[in-house]
Length: 376
Image 1: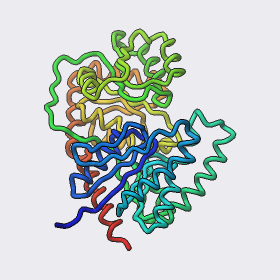
Image 2 (image 1 turned 180 degrees about the vertical axis):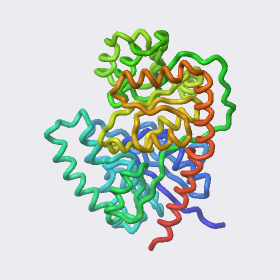
Image 3 (image 1 turned 45 degrees about the horizontal axis):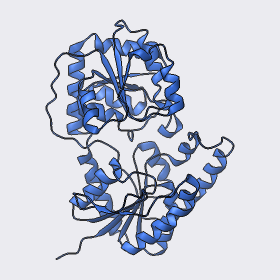
Image 4 (image 1 turned 30 degrees about the vertical axis):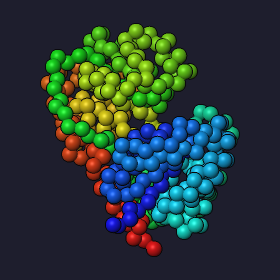
């Protein structure tokens, strides 16, 4: 019997149930013949998932400073105890762990979920005077480590292009959803918008609320579900149109799907941040593809990458996320035309089934692993 190749994924930041790490990458590898281990730091203990992924818990590291300075050493020790062939790292804090693993002649992959440098500039908890200093030193560390490991993965073109300058083996494996077969049926179209995700400033909800004042139909409601950032939420609740919001809080995946299915239009008015490449945008964010999976059209930021998808598949409308009148016009164009809502929703669902799905990315992941294993 051929022994399975042993793989270890490591994160000290993300949840053990993280969709990208566990449900997509680890599960895909386990389903395709790898022996997969996942090291986490949440204090919930060890377990084995239904797909056979073995989860190892190294305990909680309270506070960012302790997590950053200590967790990688504990993770490294556990990683060496498992003694795998490939180590797949998911956090910038683990770069030094990757370097130590490489010195032990292990295969090491780094998964850059975001643009690390730009992400620092957008962290509210980091004092502004420290941001350029941290970015500079993190840039030095990342460049030094990434040049010496076996491969790098990221989620969108502009980040991959940056990473290719320091490592020739870069793969774009993005966050398209896992598609489950279902019939998309639309009865009466409700006069409702929906957003599911973190309720934070980058999604510009205040401009969506502003837009409701300019819509022809004054009875449109905005369904929101997901975790909130208290200060931002407090500001939204002061808005004159907050009475048109149904806030459901943090709900289950099944409840999110139900809320989406009962809504007419998905909202994805993401700001032009550095982390998403400014006007370029990102396909690493899952919002558009979740609406496509749900079979509902969407109104989204006019990023170059998102506009290409919208224009090709006719599944939504692009707007300036800070222009309430433009957002209102897009809402009216859909709400006042039920046939367009149904057609665009079905177009999006078809595109998700055929193109924007995890099955396509799973093939890329497996091919990338084969390439890393083949390199000496």
